[in-house]
Length: 153
Image 1: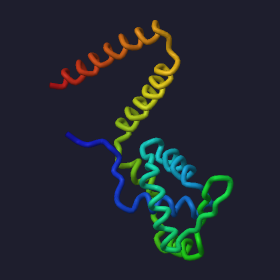
Image 2: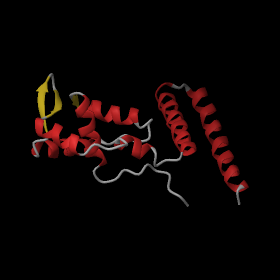
Image 3: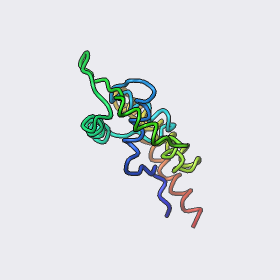
Protein backbone atom coordinates (compact mmCIF):
# COMPACT_ATOMS: atom_id res chain seq x y z
CA UNK A 1 0.00 0.00 0.00
CA UNK A 2 1.52 3.36 -0.96
CA UNK A 3 2.33 5.83 1.79
CA UNK A 4 0.85 9.26 1.13
CA UNK A 5 2.48 11.07 4.02
CA UNK A 6 4.63 13.98 2.89
CA UNK A 7 8.27 13.05 2.36
CA UNK A 8 10.51 15.40 4.27
CA UNK A 9 14.16 14.65 3.59
CA UNK A 10 17.07 15.29 5.86
CA UNK A 11 18.09 18.90 5.37
CA UNK A 12 14.66 20.13 4.18
CA UNK A 13 13.97 22.02 7.42
CA UNK A 14 17.39 23.65 7.27
CA UNK A 15 16.98 24.60 3.60
CA UNK A 16 13.48 25.99 4.21
CA UNK A 17 14.64 28.14 7.13
CA UNK A 18 17.56 29.55 5.18
CA UNK A 19 15.32 30.25 2.18
CA UNK A 20 12.75 32.11 4.28
CA UNK A 21 15.41 34.13 6.07
CA UNK A 22 16.83 35.03 2.66
CA UNK A 23 13.58 36.94 2.09
CA UNK A 24 13.24 38.68 5.47
CA UNK A 25 13.96 38.26 9.19
CA UNK A 26 11.42 36.10 11.02
CA UNK A 27 10.87 34.34 14.30
CA UNK A 28 10.58 30.56 14.52
CA UNK A 29 6.80 30.54 14.77
CA UNK A 30 6.48 32.71 11.66
CA UNK A 31 8.74 30.33 9.75
CA UNK A 32 6.64 27.32 10.79
CA UNK A 33 3.50 29.14 9.60
CA UNK A 34 5.13 30.23 6.34
CA UNK A 35 6.28 26.69 5.53
CA UNK A 36 2.80 25.32 6.21
CA UNK A 37 1.18 28.02 4.07
CA UNK A 38 3.64 27.68 1.19
CA UNK A 39 3.31 23.89 1.15
CA UNK A 40 -0.49 24.30 0.95
CA UNK A 41 -0.89 22.66 4.35
CA UNK A 42 1.07 19.53 3.46
CA UNK A 43 4.07 20.26 5.71
CA UNK A 44 4.07 21.89 9.13
CA UNK A 45 7.46 21.28 10.71
CA UNK A 46 7.38 20.85 14.46
CA UNK A 47 9.03 23.28 16.85
CA UNK A 48 11.16 20.28 17.87
CA UNK A 49 12.71 20.24 14.40
CA UNK A 50 12.77 24.00 13.72
CA UNK A 51 14.37 25.39 16.87
CA UNK A 52 17.30 22.95 17.00
CA UNK A 53 17.94 23.65 13.30
CA UNK A 54 17.91 27.40 13.99
CA UNK A 55 20.37 26.89 16.85
CA UNK A 56 22.65 24.81 14.61
CA UNK A 57 22.54 27.45 11.85
CA UNK A 58 23.34 30.11 14.42
CA UNK A 59 26.25 28.01 15.76
CA UNK A 60 27.56 27.73 12.19
CA UNK A 61 27.45 31.53 11.84
CA UNK A 62 24.83 31.43 9.05
CA UNK A 63 22.27 33.41 11.00
CA UNK A 64 21.91 35.50 14.11
CA UNK A 65 19.01 35.87 16.50
CA UNK A 66 17.91 38.96 18.39
CA UNK A 67 15.62 38.93 21.44
CA UNK A 68 12.83 41.50 21.39
CA UNK A 69 9.51 41.49 23.20
CA UNK A 70 9.84 37.88 24.34
CA UNK A 71 10.49 36.62 20.82
CA UNK A 72 13.69 35.78 19.02
CA UNK A 73 13.94 37.14 15.47
CA UNK A 74 16.45 35.49 13.16
CA UNK A 75 18.26 37.01 10.19
CA UNK A 76 20.93 35.76 7.82
CA UNK A 77 24.51 36.82 8.34
CA UNK A 78 26.74 37.69 5.39
CA UNK A 79 28.05 34.11 5.54
CA UNK A 80 24.45 32.87 5.53
CA UNK A 81 23.58 34.92 2.43
CA UNK A 82 26.67 33.57 0.65
CA UNK A 83 25.78 30.01 1.69
CA UNK A 84 22.21 30.47 0.42
CA UNK A 85 23.29 31.89 -2.94
CA UNK A 86 25.72 29.00 -3.50
CA UNK A 87 22.96 26.46 -2.95
CA UNK A 88 20.11 27.97 -4.95
CA UNK A 89 17.52 25.32 -5.83
CA UNK A 90 15.03 25.20 -8.65
CA UNK A 91 12.25 24.06 -6.30
CA UNK A 92 11.91 25.32 -2.76
CA UNK A 93 11.90 22.71 0.03
CA UNK A 94 8.17 23.27 0.66
CA UNK A 95 7.38 22.74 -3.04
CA UNK A 96 9.38 19.50 -2.99
CA UNK A 97 7.58 18.23 0.12
CA UNK A 98 4.14 19.31 -1.17
CA UNK A 99 4.89 17.61 -4.49
CA UNK A 100 5.53 14.31 -2.69
CA UNK A 101 1.79 13.97 -1.93
CA UNK A 102 -0.56 13.24 -4.86
CA UNK A 103 -3.07 16.05 -5.39
CA UNK A 104 -6.15 13.95 -4.58
CA UNK A 105 -4.54 12.75 -1.33
CA UNK A 106 -3.58 16.32 -0.51
CA UNK A 107 -7.21 17.36 -0.85
CA UNK A 108 -8.25 14.43 1.35
CA UNK A 109 -5.75 15.53 4.02
CA UNK A 110 -7.09 19.11 3.89
CA UNK A 111 -10.67 17.91 4.28
CA UNK A 112 -9.67 15.77 7.26
CA UNK A 113 -7.97 18.81 8.81
CA UNK A 114 -11.18 20.80 8.39
CA UNK A 115 -13.21 18.03 10.03
CA UNK A 116 -10.70 17.92 12.86
CA UNK A 117 -11.01 21.67 13.36
CA UNK A 118 -14.81 21.40 13.48
CA UNK A 119 -14.52 18.54 15.97
CA UNK A 120 -12.34 20.70 18.22
CA UNK A 121 -15.00 23.41 18.26
CA UNK A 122 -17.71 20.83 18.90
CA UNK A 123 -15.82 19.30 21.84
CA UNK A 124 -15.46 22.72 23.47
CA UNK A 125 -18.88 24.30 23.01
CA UNK A 126 -21.53 21.75 21.98
CA UNK A 127 -24.55 21.02 24.14
CA UNK A 128 -25.76 17.45 24.85
CA UNK A 129 -28.08 17.37 21.80
CA UNK A 130 -25.28 18.50 19.47
CA UNK A 131 -22.87 15.93 20.91
CA UNK A 132 -25.41 13.14 20.37
CA UNK A 133 -26.03 14.24 16.77
CA UNK A 134 -22.29 14.46 16.08
CA UNK A 135 -21.71 10.97 17.50
CA UNK A 136 -24.36 9.55 15.17
CA UNK A 137 -22.83 11.39 12.21
CA UNK A 138 -19.34 10.09 13.02
CA UNK A 139 -20.63 6.51 13.38
CA UNK A 140 -22.39 6.76 9.98
CA UNK A 141 -19.30 8.31 8.43
CA UNK A 142 -17.05 5.53 9.74
CA UNK A 143 -19.41 2.86 8.36
CA UNK A 144 -19.57 4.69 5.02
CA UNK A 145 -15.79 4.84 4.73
CA UNK A 146 -15.47 1.11 5.39
CA UNK A 147 -18.23 0.49 2.82
CA UNK A 148 -16.21 2.48 0.23
CA UNK A 149 -13.14 0.41 1.06
CA UNK A 150 -15.08 -2.86 0.81
CA UNK A 151 -16.30 -1.92 -2.70
CA UNK A 152 -12.71 -2.03 -3.91
CA UNK A 153 -12.16 -5.66 -2.89
